[in-house]
Image (cartoon, rainbow, N blue to C red):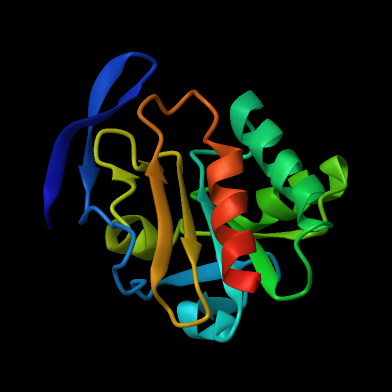
Length: 172
């Protein structure tokens, strides 16, 4: 497994990301994650849609909470061709509880807890703590990555405008 050191920090401390760096133009890597109803999900389940994929450490942290709520609000203006996924290592039960309490219905939360499949394939698994680093990817209907941002400091928010603009361009 490829290790990438000093790419991001967690509370100011450098951490190691496992997996490749995904860039705009790359073919979106497949993954196997678990939905809130415990069913499996892969990239193929979203074929033909534009995807905004937000990787976050845990929905039970302030920045992840804020980010997922923001994408939930922004979803209304994106149309039916855009699907927003938030992937974390949280258990599906915790994700479902959080979504219910937060009133999040437009973002699908997915758990990578079982195999860290998404984290390793998309290069966001933090080796030292087995959580996902904060990142946002936009994938077109063609299965190619149109936008990739690895947030340099895990405790900071992503560039929402860049991700949303990339998604809008793919639906125009």
